[in-house]
Image: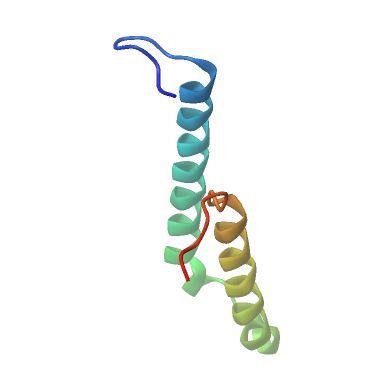
Length: 72
């Protein structure tokens, strides 16, 4: 249930904090992605890219609200 106009309840505040954290992570990933070409990982770079991709995908799925039932 939402809050009244011009007020916050705990649920609304939690959503704002969660959204701010996601925006911060997105900004960090954008910064890291733009500067990735300056990093020389050597032969391990080929192995690290898929691992990092799986970790990012897993974290996005973990953060999303999956409490809603899926329609089959």
